Image 1 (cartoon, helix red, strand yellow):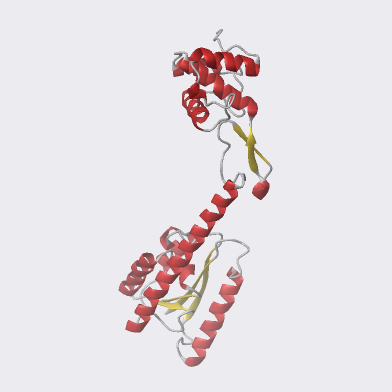
Image 2 (cartoon, rainbow, N blue to C red):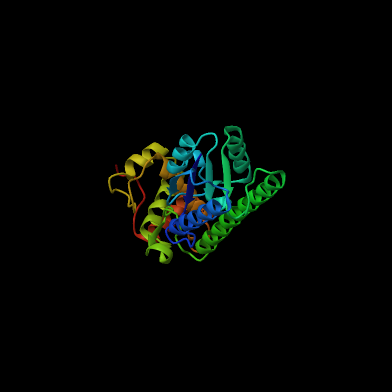
Length: 266
């Protein structure tokens, strides 16, 4: 009979470090040898560790987890500190546990205090698996809420700059500020489109610096996006939305505001 340990950690600053988990596993195995749970002839193979690995990743998709599953066979024991170190959800835990049972592999989870292969063990196992899944869902929800709040404060969290805006600062201090030159380019695209120019002609005539763009160049996709951005989000001319102007009035307002004619000279 062989004994395998398994550890996992999502990030380097977790309190439940790989070293801490390993120390707990070794202490458990030592105690089991004393009380007769493991014999002196049982081989301690070692610890299989997955550092910087999300709990949402299936055990079979983790490097060490996959190796562990390939090496463990009938009569072997696998020891892990907590349920969520090995499984990503209640459903995942039940599937893997059934695989262990069919393969004749015994799983020891230290947080249980006993093996989950008895009726009461299976009940508690499934209950704690559901709790672990709930905890991960709550963490995801808090993360989403935190990102939404940060964005509501103008911070640029995990996002590229939308048309007409640019990102300043880094990390938690990053935020979006108006890119007035690009917003003006977007308005020019609106005027050209409303005059009847095709999207293809607008994109072609705007490329290669002929119409300012903060990053990259204009193409068929982003000139469409520029049109929608102006219609929905951009500042107004003289207190009126762009839709309130006739084409001629828009051209006049545009020229007054910028000093530029929007007539395509290409």
